Length: 388
Ligand SMILES: NC(=O)c1ccc[n+]([C@@H]2O[C@H](COP(=O)([O-])OP(=O)(O)OC[C@H]3O[C@@H](n4cnc5c(N)ncnc54)[C@H](OP(=O)(O)O)[C@@H]3O)[C@@H](O)[C@H]2O)c1
Image (cartoon, rainbow, N blue to C red; front, side):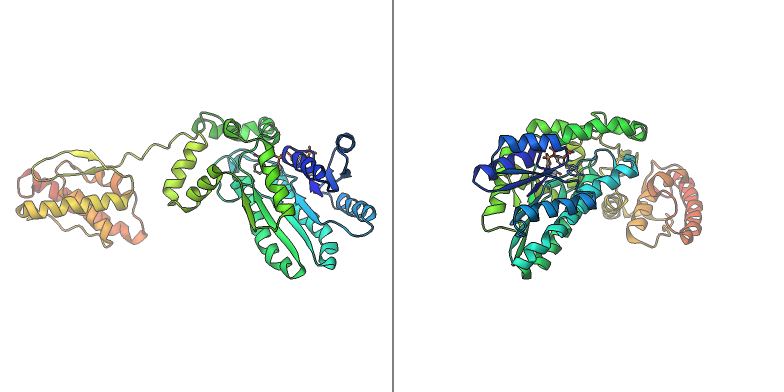
């Protein structure tokens, strides 16, 4: 049985399995479309099934039981699914819950309903259609990813729990497939347009980025072939089709977070956030001037500061005589403070703030004030040439 059998992936899979001579219960919602589908394809039997409706699931189980003389299913493919688009906090609560109701709880409820016959027989197979977005999350489809991550976790546990009963649990992770899933998701966006408004400036290309990805989408045929393989061949725990999908998944799950975030930002069409205007004053040898830090990270800035200080100490130790010792306790902070002290371009303690921001801890405040006083004095001394 295939849930979501009238959808892009479910339909092709049902046709392939029926074509190979198997009896396929095509489970979906619209009764007339199901009948028409079954009429076109001998071997396909229509089952009306709402995966979020317990009564409908019970009815479907009874129907399958009656048509198989109580045998039940050999293979259950949980392919029914929806996609909710939009930045996670802009997605209305109802849609976010529906996302999970269909993609996660629906699959669990249908599995539970059809499992008992498999368990009693000591064999059977449950194939959960996840997604590569069940391995990594992209901005704009976080709620969908969350549901697929959850489905992955559930399947990982089920695989082990059901193994003693001879029931195999398999995950199939399609990439971007050309099906109506994306159009349906994009069509729902105007329904919560107001919540999306604050995010619009950051998404110049719009939230329909999956639509753009569709340009590289593959036809449902390929993933249907994988599903057939997962249904009939000795199963692996996971199937992912296509070198591109495998590389993307490998990259985005193993790269350092900062790097993968940058890639995801680009994929999703998000405007790159501007770096905070952090200026690290630098003086090397006799050169003077204020240059932008190559990194907005305070730790990196401190490191750069440390290098500058070291260079100054080595080159011009006399320049340090008479300068107050910064009161920082943590190494990076004290280095950065020392850097500020050493910078002739820093004219006032106010320039300390863009570098360090506010005091990190409440007990930082007093040393900072003291330091600002010292810094003012140092600036004055600098003016008199005592501390260059
Ligand atoms: N297309 C992709 O790029 C892609 C990528 C990765 C993973 N997937 C996954 O592959 C699966 C199939 O997706 P698809 O691309 O074939 O999408 P699709 O063409 O939109 O098909 C989804 C099917 O699920 C059915 N469905 C939705 N809610 C249901 C409910 N409450 N009860 C019963 N059936 C319900 C839909 O039926 P109705 O017509 O009645 O709504 C539809 O037939 C989904 O789990 C999806 O997350 C798709």
